[in-house]
Length: 616
Image (cartoon, rainbow, N blue to C red; front, side):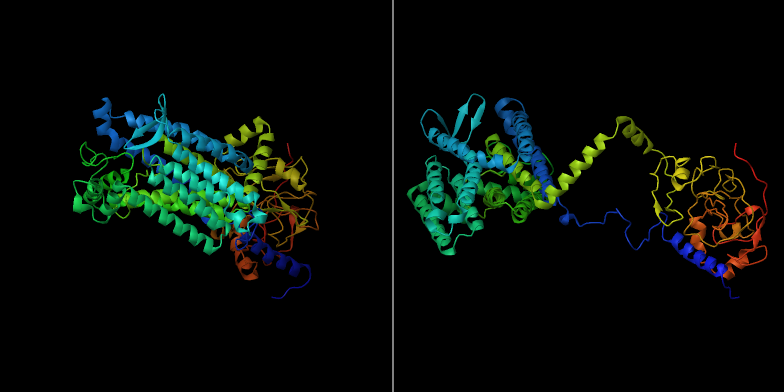
């Protein structure tokens, strides 16, 4: 039947309270994220996505390289030194030296790389001149490319790549206001890299010259060189490479053997044919790690350097070879992503130059192994044996990681994370230890609490004690006492199977209020709470109800304890409340109750009066 006056308002509050309790255990609507909650972000949209893409691909390539150097070099290393691990240990030492250097480079600011550009270029040009001096430069395989200093072998043509990247990027940034003029765009950049190419070709090292030429061409493309200038430079480079091939008979034979290696399978096409045999033998899944036959002496040359991909294909099959290709693809994507997202011109140019250098070198090596490109003696970055190639590559990748950390979104994220860590370190060690120890305890029920005025009360952290402190926050006098259940979900809420007992002075009879959303399971500020009501419909309707603490109405100056799980099932309707009631009156409109005893939030019937228990 229709009601009016305060009872109507009480029923409305009951219905709104039931809805408020049903929105979630933390007091916020599940359809809308709670304040401070983090929304799920796509992987590639996260601030450090470029950093972790680059780091993961480089790490996996390094690990794969160590394993395959051990497998490919074990037989020949044993034949040369009596130990199968000699070359592997040397490669592991180079990795152990290069990784810390790369870590240091990844933490360097951009200005450091700009400052070392000119000194590094001058040093590498000096080394390129020194290696050509007979008696200083070591000749291997018909090329004078190495400087031997005790147990250390230095290859200047590898060091000049990173030096040229830094110098070209810094030069164009300094002249950015004059780049509209051709002389400032091309001079002195083009004469310098042509001079370096000439020194490398005098060794001779055609593969190294190709990789070095890629760096300035990429940087000039990124900076926006007009197509007519760019086309003219490409034609000049192609013409020069053709003249070099014609002037040297062995280069011409190598180029011709690439087109049909089986025409001279025992001569100029021998290495290419053996590489194709190795890839074909592997099939889909390979012969198994360490089971390669081509790595034995008198078969495939340079198995642990130039042709290590052939051993990967033979032992790990097509799947293993495709994994290498995919990892280099991820590395290239990460490098171009860093260059695209950077707001610093130097970072953009240097990132593009490093990425082009590593990816083009990998493509030239893999193409030569697969018979798609001429054999130029270029190693596979991060995988092939050789410290002279590995160290400059790791330094360049460390610089690329530093550029990834300098992206605008990444820099802001790292700044906020550093502030949070500093704030966390400011907390005394005793409190931090206590929080760490409490993490292992079982979680207690998390309740969304709302004060009488409507302001939300902070929820204590999981595992922390809620006794005493919660009542003081809500304004409850310290004299009151309550028992908090030890585990949510027990029948009746109390560890002994009963309801929660609240001991406060009784303030007299009070009318029942249907509000459940505005009450949150805490005692009132002015006292006057009785024992929780035990309606006959409790066990039928809310057998697993939580700890509903009793309270009188707001007129009597008390607050009611709302159980959120029971309130979720209640809709505030009078019919359901009437069926659950065992006394007179409907839910939210039950008359006066003696001794100020209140039922559950929303009302479940008339409860028996209980004698007051004074707090001890």
